[in-house]
Structures are given as C-alpha cells and as structure tokens.
Image 1 (cartoon, rainbow over the protein chains, first blue to last red):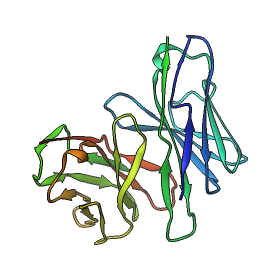
Image 2 (image 1 turned 135 degrees about the vertical axis):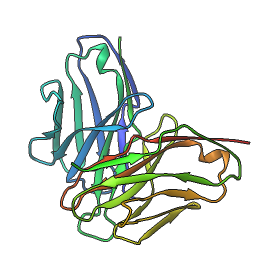
Image 3 (image 1 turned 90 degrees about the vertical axis):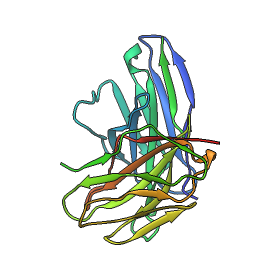
Image 4 (image 1 turned 90 degrees about the horizontal axis):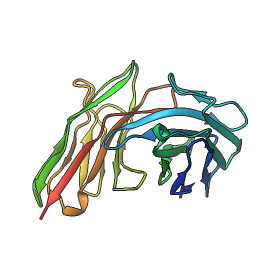
Length: 118
Length: 112
C-alpha cells in the first residue's frame, strides 16, 4: 500500500520548452505532497510542499514561476518546469504523506524523473 | 534551524563486514527519525524509523536507535551483502511540521 507513481521516469527536452512531471497516489489520498530535486551524488533538496486545493509553499531560493506546482486533486500533483534550461537538468522526486492521523503515518516516494535539457 | 549530519562516504566494505553509518541531528522539540535507502536510478525507500527516544527501528537486518542524549540515530548492520550497495539517507521530521529534512547521504559499496 501507499504507492506513488511518478511519470515520466525520464525526459529529454529542448531548451526553452516546458516539461510536466506527474505524481499520482495510487491507493490512498494524498493531501500533502512534496517535490524534491536531487543533484548527482547529492542529497534531496526540498523544492516545495503542495496541499490539495491550495497554493504550494516554496522553499527559499526556489523560483515559483519557473517550477509550477499544481495539486488539484487528492491523488495528483504536477510539477511543470517552464522555459527549461540546461541548468534545470536534474533528478526530480515527488513524495506524499500517507496514513495521517494514524499509527501508520509515513512518507512514500515516487521513483523519480530524470530531466535532461539540451 | 533543524539539520541532519551524516558521515561522508563513500563507505567501502567487503561482504559480511559490519556496517555503521553515523547520523546526528539538531532539532527543536522531539523529532521523528528515519533512514531511507536509494538504489541506483530509483526513488527513496523507507528502511526504518523511530518516533521517540530510545526506540529502535529495524528492518532487513539494519538497526538504528534513537538516542536523545547524544542526538544520534546511527545505522548498523552486522553482516552486509553486495545487494546492500546503495545510498543511505538519514532524515528527521520536526515535531509540528510535515516536511522531511535529509542528511547529505552516504554511499555504500559492498564488494564480494
């Protein structure tokens, strides 16, 4: 249980175009989801927290106009990288909270999306 | 602010060796502590967790004990296997907040 499906697993796009990454909770309702960025051989950097039906909360230094996050339903959050440039190339990972309020509270992670901007 | 510090890697071991990956934290209140594992090209998987002082999390032969007095949550395994080769992340969730704060990660390479 508590599975999050992230698509696509990898994408190559041209500089200046936009790319959308989807994160779906398959067997639970995800009120809160998180988006992380991971550089090679480095830790996960939290980009933003998204709550269903409200605006995302971005971490300091993350450009909200470049990384658009939409969490319109309890099972889907999307991250759109707008006007992508080579420096946006990275591994993006989504995460969701499951079991809130119960003893089985935890975090589940998507398998990640490798974005390469050429 | 809240933070997690992990020992730098890579850690290279022979199969069946003993593993320790150190993790210390700084947090206000009483955080929950986690160890996650990331295999190449994949997302993170929860390895174990502990939610209060003196709790011991365990899974797949790995163990970690929540030590409030030393603000530590060191990961241990008595006998590692080649299949344990991965990156291990220590993380905390501060009380009252939803987000996880991760350490830098420690790469483990186990050789036959």
